[in-house]
Image 1 (cartoon, rainbow, N blue to C red):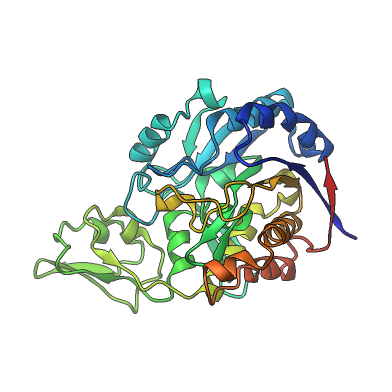
Image 2 (cartoon, one colour):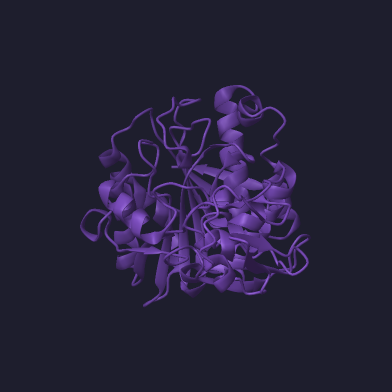
Length: 355
């Protein structure tokens, strides 16, 4: 039986106020209020911006969702997690400051911000999954403690998997830094001797006792290393290096982290994809880019596979060809969607209902 995906079309650079005005009818038609029970702590998962990028969803849009959740009896909070790469979002302090500079405050966005994996990306819960690559995945603490969630996603291209939509937003955005690491990397970490200061912090935090400091250099015993990413999370000098994996493995691992976030609460999450200002790179790149196709609109549903399939179909139709394989030759962006369907997260058979 097909899943229903609701679509509200928009024009290029449509005023935010006009979109906000139409959102409640879209959300009501999609039955998204059903995911919230009185008193639920509700995660609004979004990207809070990396300067000078301007593609992230703006506070007035986010506030519309926060106000709806509040009206349903929920307690909304905005959330994302610390990044692996060095930038304004690599720890909670810098990230919160950046988010405030982008206008995300309780007044402007309707809810407080909670960085899901804590101060430096190490606050996590291990969740059991029946995956091909993992039996457990490290999920950001706040993502698992939330009672319900809305994934608010800006659809873009992505250097690692071709396409960044709701699956990527949840998988990478609600994994701890350890989770991000094992999604991206297919080898154990190594120490850059030129960057290492032998401070010993990585050895202190290593849960496997795999790191020692000898001759003014941290050394990792790969026989003991469990690939948890704690060393990467706590290193202040960017001395922990990794070999990043290839696209198929990354996409499959992403899906298994989505399983970890949604485990036991599949009926408590909904997905809102903004197929507007679709760019070659994701918002993490931190630069202003041109849109690759005319704006399409906002897609909403409770089936992540259906929402992602509909988003890709509409984007490809607007481009007149499969867009992301052209932008990123050799990358098949639908691997993640097919894998999510194989693992029972939804169906690619959808009915599109235009508002």
